[in-house]
Amino acid sequence: MIAAARLQSVLQYLAVIILVALLVCFATCSGSWPAVTGITVGAMILAAFAAEVVNFRLQSHLRTGWFSIFVTAVVLVLVAGLVLPTFGAIAAVSAVAIVCFFDCASSSGRVSRLLKKAGVRVGLMGASNEELRRLRTGDCFHCGYDMAGLPTPVCPECGKESRIEARA
Image 1 (cartoon, rainbow, N blue to C red):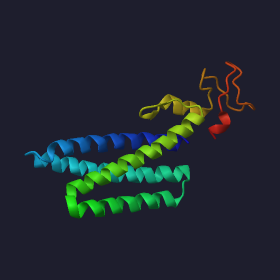
Image 2: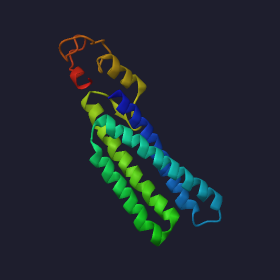
Image 3: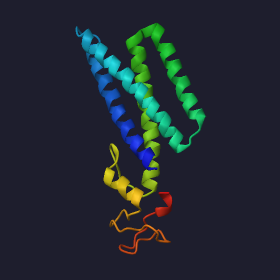
Image 4: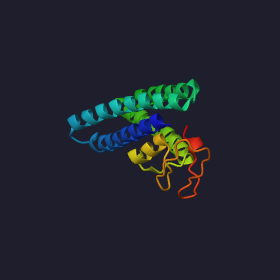
């Protein structure tokens, strides 16, 4: 669970890079700045490739199986193949980056739901390091009491359920 949470944070940062590069690319592709457009297209390609690599590792941590990875690969190839002949390379890269962005968002949302189910507070860019430390050590999420080795999920300090069994 902790490895998935860390991968989720990396995935969200890559999604932000894809989104910013996409916006810069759209803003400069029709103008007189071909160097900026080239750099942003390169950044989108690298970020999209890295995001799919991280997403692949995340999917293997979540044990979703090979089918979802296969479907994502087929969708990426189809989008690039359909857009490239008609609209050109920049539009094809942009379309693939958009697909990668939504793919990252869906995987990140799944990790967020699992973390919330385990009692972790998840922010915009994932769970904080403090929340992950509590998840790893078995502390109560409400008061910080060390619950390692307790037979029940109810904290003896604050009386709230901390869902230790969901963290394993």
